[in-house]
Image (cartoon, rainbow, N blue to C red; front, side):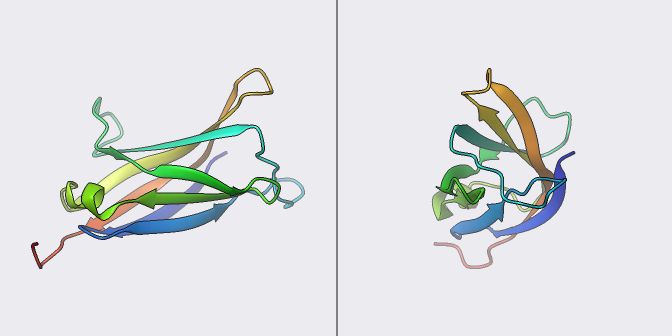
Length: 115
């Protein structure tokens, strides 16, 4: 089952957070050496349109560590409010096994100062 998280992104600012993937049974880091990680945001669970994507980098494959990022330019294009997102992996070695690791809500807070 995917872990539920709530994140906050300041509109017009760079965003970055690190996520560590642990095995549910052993609580040990999952080796994600052969994984591809992707993430999308949508305004509603049923929306056919992707509002934006989080850029996902594997920063420590053996330690199960992933960094999620969004640039200031991309976050400035988001309307303030609530977005739903998930982080999915594809294990390219294990017959393209797909898994949803994280799901949750991103709150985009409005920028007062406009460039």
